[in-house]
Length: 95
Image 1: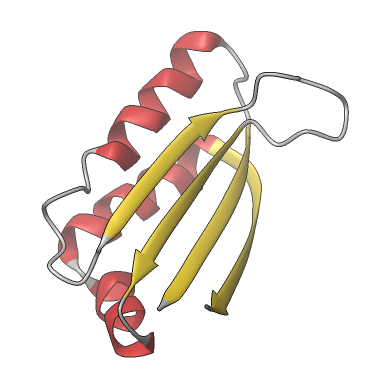
Image 2 (image 1 turned 45 degrees about the vertical axis):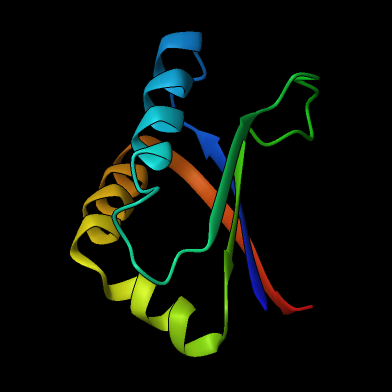
């Protein structure tokens, strides 16, 4: 199993902006065959060091993650997130 974790800092940190991003990411569920599970959440602490939202996606293997990266539905969401965030960080690990 491969776990893909991404955290985002939004340019616009309003509730509406973050909610829009969360819904766009959640919309990937059921669209990418290799995506086994998807969790998306908004930060509730809102400290200076917090990221605004995070996703946790799970795949059977590295090939599944790689297929997700280039899947057209993911690319649309990725392009959106790049346009509305000031930065992101990610980690991918095997479990």
